[in-house]
Picture 1 (tube, each protein chain N blue to C red):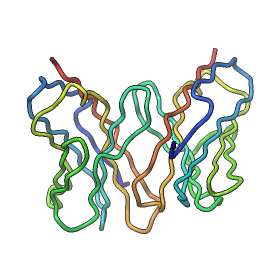
Picture 2: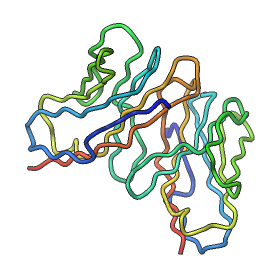
Picture 3: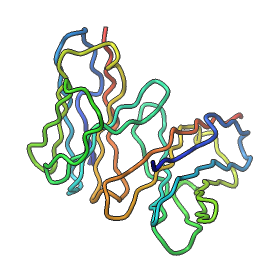
Picture 4: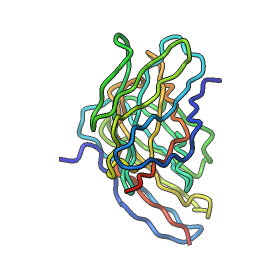
Length: 112
Length: 113
């Protein structure tokens, strides 16, 4: 039974398109995150939510809009995709902001 | 600003050899410290964590780490590396009661047969 699941696993699309990535956790955690990992494996926090409330928004272009319909879900919508958005996007969750994080397997986004 | 430094970008060891991956963190009153491993095509998995108490902590897959407050370090060790340990390793620090969670830049481990 997967703890943190993201869909889709792969996303190949063209510049200018709009796409969404979905994330669900069944761990009962209060806090969820989106990270971007570039080709050099650098992990950058994008957003953090606690109980559906936005806690962290790390200088991410406003083309990226997270949405948390409930504690178990955190989706990421990206408008007007650019070449530089190509990366692996990870969803994670934790019981609290200072506790271990559980990661999904990532969504590999490729922009043509 | 608070930060986590992993000075080694790449490390190569022979199978069966011992391993030490370095991690240093900047100032933090009560840091919570973590090591994660990322295998190719997968998300990060927690190896071990330090909150308080015994400064030598044991984790999964035979890994251990030692917290040294005087050196602001939390180095990861394994006495005998297996080929399946080849992966990317991330050190992270969090601060009690906050949402500040900082990952290092990672160390890629290569294991020679």
